[in-house]
Image (cartoon, rainbow, N blue to C red; front, side):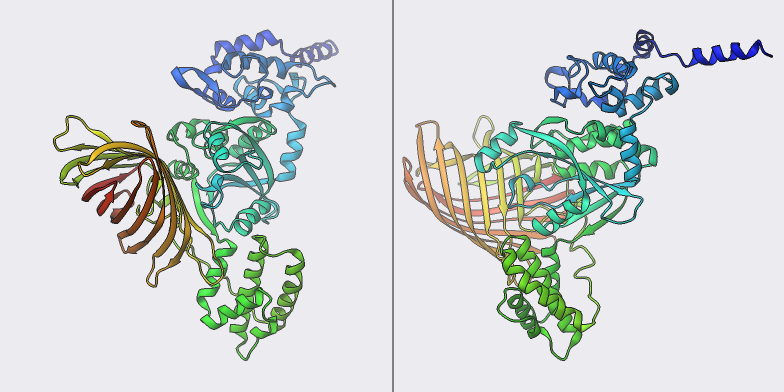
Length: 620
């Protein structure tokens, strides 16, 4: 027996000897781990132009090999070497920097932790234990048209803690660092990947305050059916993405796309990022998750503006108006108190919410806010009446239940006496007359829409119109909020010139600003002043136009109508007074199919013509 003890001790010591780097690298190479789906996901590797593979991550700190961005095998070998290296006081160990990669290699190669110089990232384990993750959700703040970066909405991950309070939940957000840029510089740099993007981890309540209270955006939350093991794998990868930068591209490598890689780290077999369309918008991410069966439940958080409007609708007009004046400091809080305690309580609740909305929108200073806010709370508390929820049900269906972003159209019609056939494509996203369910009323974002026509008597088809981007923000004014309405259009259009109707293509930029108001039975009408610039390459010639536009968006069940009257006076190389009367419309068959039509009478540069068309529109 005494002879066995040293032998057993020697065997145990041998089993705990460190791994040889070359040995483990050979095993990994033989197993072809560099081409494993999970390894490629952790590196964010995909095929780019001309089939060249590359990582979407641009920060060199993300790679241990100088060739790691383009060579997953080289990065694998460098990672194995880093994981098996002895800890150094001068640099953070690879297991601490890349715990997801380390855990993957340990699991995939069946490595014995006792033989590793650093068996796990204690820093991550401490943070993981402190967070105590319970579940994961995708939060989708709806579109906010008055900030260009938020026009398509946004997506971020929410990690719920076992401590069942919203204060403990954490938000994982990926966003561009745009600084103070705006206007043309913002658009150009965003489209060309000119901004760095970074992940951040912060309390979810802070993001809710930003979206719901400051930006006045409703927030939809989609709970994901992830197991504890899935959540841990995802958070391991989130940990190694801290402080790592990548070029942010507004239409593909954006918040919507990068979150798919985090979710793929949880379940690599899903390959969610591979299901994304070429133009990725936040709503696409939500739909991909829903189609994959990962969404277990959906909830909705109304914004402060939505709450104000809901409270105002429930009150008599005179009480709503008095609540507004109380919040503005024109009347004391006691003015709301009369013999009806319940109605007085509702009126004061409206005044409190509206006062907070004004402060969040920076319409009031702290010095103006505080003297009004505290008396309101004190007067409300004296009534002893419990508050009613401002609104309990969303005004429409969840955003992912709306029509698809891609729209294809085919149809025909007559223009200036010539019949034509028409085909069109619009990669994204929604216009005023598309099926309304799931989208913000009065908002339009058209991106890269292309329409071609084949006119009777012509030898070949022609480009009728290219809409690089078409934006509309028609937010109706009411007693409490007075937002501006505006539009921006830019692209290329086929125009008829002169009495002979000679056609030529105009590059154009059209900007309009004005206001809109709600119609009595739904819909809205608007009045704007438009400024229009056109450039013709053939001469070359330039025309600048200015004039009024009146229109409406009317919805009658499945029918949507957009009558528009416009007049523009042009100066420059193409002086003219142009005008048009038009009516566009759609009839929604279901969320994926509609029938569109239009009729117009217009004079453009002395060409007077009547046009009419009809088309079938399919959404994917």
